[in-house]
Length: 319
Image (tube, rainbow, N blue to C red; front, side, top):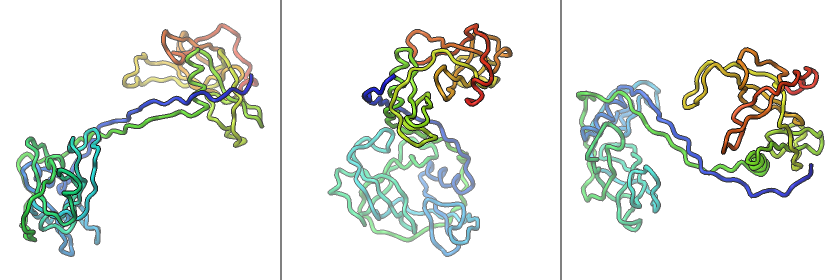
């Protein structure tokens, strides 16, 4: 048991993604269905302003608004920013400008992209028009982008019922976040030790408690921890629950037991699945040991050791 130099920090790319599904009210349904039909709709507020994209409630009075109008497919750039390095799933694969475009007849601006050869060709007040996507489904991506277009602005708008055949009533938007995760110094040591089938924690220099997994600081004393301590491999079930709902993507038959396990020498219990014993025979105080599978970086589950159950007084402070 001794302080060890900090290992090189682990880093790994992670992705969080999920489909976001939402239903559409009458205004958003009309707006997106209109895009599918190459028609841009806005909404008129109580003070006569035309909002594009439309909203369902008046930003001044908070009352519902349904007064739909059709605006132009040409407009004026009000502000912009050049994007020299498009990322995955952005509207264009080549460098482009993010632009706010006030469409003719509208009083607000729509955020989209402008296909331009370079930043020197983009300016505020430049005139643009919509380039429609070849295949349109009722989404903001039905506007493929804006493109430069010399024309005179017009304030003309026409009323619109918002009624279309086969209206779009809901959308599914994929949400995705790519990022690089680093677990930090303490957990890097913990993960590296697991690769050698060892479990290490860190001891607080003040209260002398050993935390597993380590967080790099004592949550009680608020001081940094650095002394690595190997614990386990055996431990004691301090509390548990029986899982009756099969998790998606998890190849474990239900019911099974998930438990808090205080490894020998640790002052904090960690989580683990209990196997090798009927679920209804798992109990507090059960002595367990890890079961590793080939190539795994963590125990697959914990199984009974056959030792007598631990005395409650030995683990009651770890519940």
